[in-house]
Length: 180
Image 1 (cartoon, rainbow, N blue to C red):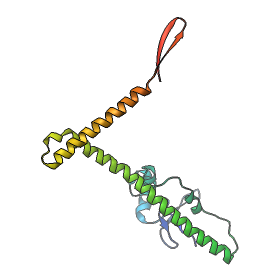
Image 2 (image 1 turned 60 degrees about the horizontal axis):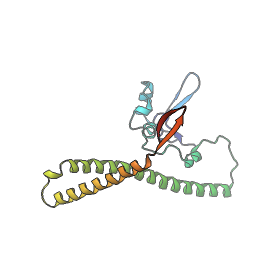
Image 3 (image 1 turned 180 degrees about the vertical axis):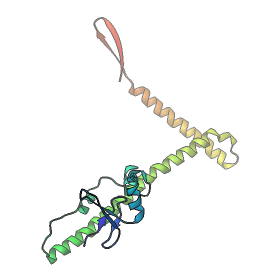
Image 4 (image 1 turned 60 degrees about the vertical axis):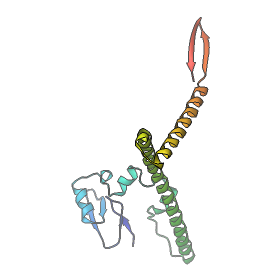
């Protein structure tokens, strides 16, 4: 018995479950539930449905390229039963699952960290714009933060000025200024 993947949403389709649609050219489409089958019949694009795996990958919400995905590929060649091979295979599957979970968690943390930084910077910008409206201890914190930001921007602008170097080259009697 084989666990298939739904053509529309990429979820698991266990034996005896789901719907199988066979087109006139003998191409088989498996669906986990009627919802996926109906969307397929209405010719909807799975990459535009927010609940599908294809959308999550296209939007950058899930890992796209990872070496652990290679282990899920179909292998159509039957092999003779060998107990040692089966034990090694099951151990390897457990190790691959652990690795996949760790990588998935790391990916999600990095993805969410970017969103948190954006939220923090937008809140800090708002505080900087309206620091004079605040009262109490938060006002002093906002003003000190405003001074720190101003100092940091001065340092960055000085570094940019130093990195620009003007080079004068002579070509055919005329002068040309080049900035790198």
